[in-house]
Length: 396
Ligand SMILES: C[S@@+](CC[C@H](N)C(=O)[O-])C[C@H]1O[C@@H](n2cnc3c(N)ncnc32)[C@H](O)[C@@H]1O
Image (tube, rainbow, N blue to C red):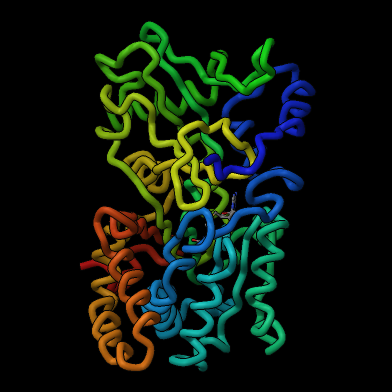
């Protein structure tokens, strides 16, 4: 049985025809995720969590926000004690999904450090109106309490105005990518067009752009990443993250003193761009299942990619960020006290066994190396004072 919504994508066809019958994969991904009327995130159709299309760490387990908050608290206390907070401190979340992470962070500070909470404002940077509605609903009770929670676009934030912690959990994986393909040793972009007879979406090769060629050349020169790799078979394809550098640069410009934590699935370049990884990492999800045909139900499924570890770190450092650390999520959460949280579940078993068992299962999935435990935490900093040293318990 096909559990996908009816594949009626007339809206998308009209957009492609309007653009001359073919669009880049980058444009396709942007439209199917972010179109305000029909896009998966843009329209707010996205359902996160174990009852939705896919789980993210905060939508699956409240313990994730609790443990991450311990790290945020440790950082902010150091900001405070070392005079970095002449401006009000911020916790900024990019792409806040259904608002679970911010809600969990606020709950943590309410219980554990109200004094610090008073010195913080929460900023959400979310381009998709459909998701903003969900976030406002989730955070309604805190807004009513008068907590400073604001939604802003990146452009609305002044340069060098942010002091605090900037979070991006599973956001860079939703930034549109170019798809590139090997044709006899030459690289083309994959475009999306419509089959003349059936009207179905199909891939069509298009030429590369100057920006794409430049970005690939930099990866070759600085990181020895060969695209296509030696021995790549005909039709070898992958994705290229052309937005990461632009995003990192714009975030860097907004920070005065701050830590940027990016959490995502990420692969080493030698595995990502190997000749045997013939189809990149692009994946589509619906109802907790992988949808192998990316064109099956555009706008109704999530589309996501892994990040490339080396290019992300290289881009960040070239822009000016300092790398504080890079750690697997499983290790980071254990260092922050996941085992103690697991131990607490024992006491809950007698009260509500099914609730306790699902909490335990979620905790284990957060650290499972075959599941969310393999996510990578990239921690970058920008401080005005050079060699500002900051303790981070999440790194062993
Ligand atoms: C996979 S969801 C992750 C949600 C949430 N961070 C979590 O972990 O549950 C991706 C989120 O990023 C948002 N998003 C997409 N493009 C974005 C961009 N350029 N800047 C900020 N957020 C973006 C989406 O609307 C969505 O809320």
